[in-house]
Image 1 (cartoon, rainbow, N blue to C red):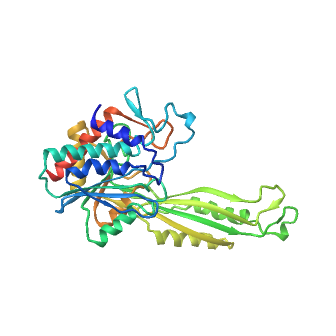
Image 2 (cartoon, rainbow, N blue to C red):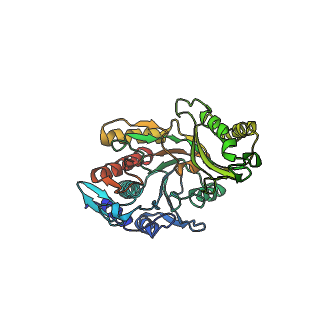
Image 3 (cartoon, rainbow, N blue to C red):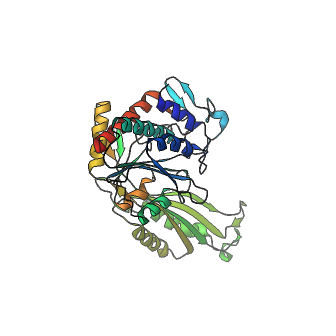
Length: 375
């Protein structure tokens, strides 16, 4: 059994459903503090955050990850218990195997090998862990970055071990992510009997034309790095459940995944302009999950490309697809940020897994990224 596989199995056994860390960060600290890493706990509310740093010189390279996982779903649908790591047909099954305890195990063992080979490496290496990525992400990396910025501890390069790969390990590097803006719309009407519509105001009827316009709006046409901005309605609710009552209010949830052609305030202004045209009474609440970010070029991308080509023999694709990650909190500080990790096909699914071969390839890629930047 390899050291990477052994560590991953230990992490999977710990039921760290968000925001619970379940002792995972203690395991990582115990591995790295004997190698000269200084341990710092930066916990906020119910979230555990771990900052491990070796060296004080620049440049500062950071491996970023999260020890929390999503809930398992129905246990009887799993072929083996989700928190009992199980090897079948060359794959390790368990919740978090790909998202993202596999990436964590791979970069911890990569760091161990790199330091053994280059104990006097240039610059500094840090590992940042949170237990609040799969949740609402309000007390995790966003808070740690505030602490680092307040003391002028600047990150130069940040590699997020999220599952970025598509069909084979390392075939895709995320060099940016779209922004995510969530909205909760409440439309007010007047409840009444369906037989007397003149005595009521139906918020569904009032909102329907605006909904059509919102979903048909061309927000932008994207650019060479990002697809066009997309608005998606995730939920609409109105009514009491009775078939003879006109509802008194309607609630709609929608999200915009937006590119660097737009900003938060422009989206809000254009949305209100559409709603205001239709003349109904409404309230609109917004929550910004993260702004878009992009690392277009630089030493980190070059190092990742070189490492992947050396280990696998093929050239990766730079991409900005997918959802959001904690990289969105680091990029605004000026750091180069990429995501490079396991294949994402099974993440958040029943029977989540990672191929044993991929785990070792990924660890080797991470080691070579460090060599390319800090040896």
